[in-house]
Image (cartoon, rainbow, N blue to C red; front, side, top):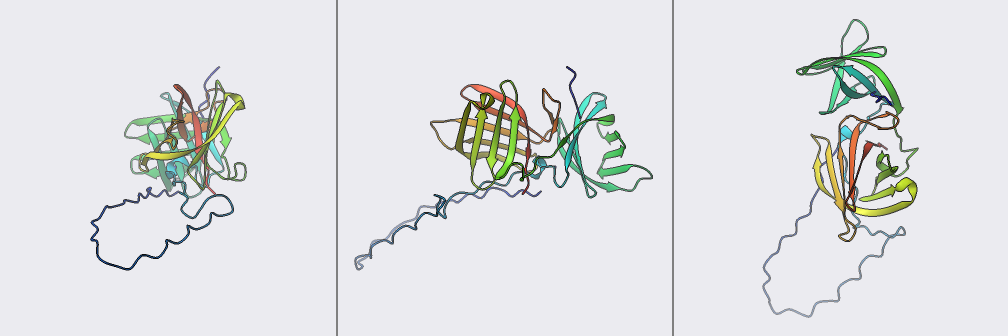
Length: 251
């Protein structure tokens, strides 16, 4: 089967640091009893519950309604998401955002020496690396919060079929494996969050149930359908490695 070919704002994670101090003992009246801890909220989480991290904007299609895959010569796979205000471009090297530029015909977008000129189902990409002549291939409707309520990122892969979803409110990951026969929801911790590179690495929040999830903003194509995605996803669990594609889902 032929292979089909077809970046808003992320904040750094804040870490609270506890600093030990010296204590001087002096005569004082007996302390009053410590106040009772606050009651948990109705959803089972108290006010100190951690929040989900904000992911790099390069993992999201922005306001674009669809993702487009391109087949280029010389051989390279590209993914774009386009609006009137910008074009987001993903390649095997990472992600870029380009602004509209004046052109006699078609639509041109520019970011420094990187330029993309769209004319119908054809595209010309020029950069320091050279020139690519591309033709539009498979398109994919971008995932929405309406379709995936409460989900900040969705990733999936094949053989066997699996998918992962990151909750948009708390640092929890739900993984569904083996075509839905196994499912687990686990807390996670962030080990790497690189906004510039569009890279996130997560690890399990439970020592007894280890896993790692790596998400990178690079052009990705489903190895069965050829659908284009803006992120590559690698899940490592129980000695197995699952590879697939994914997309950040904005509210």
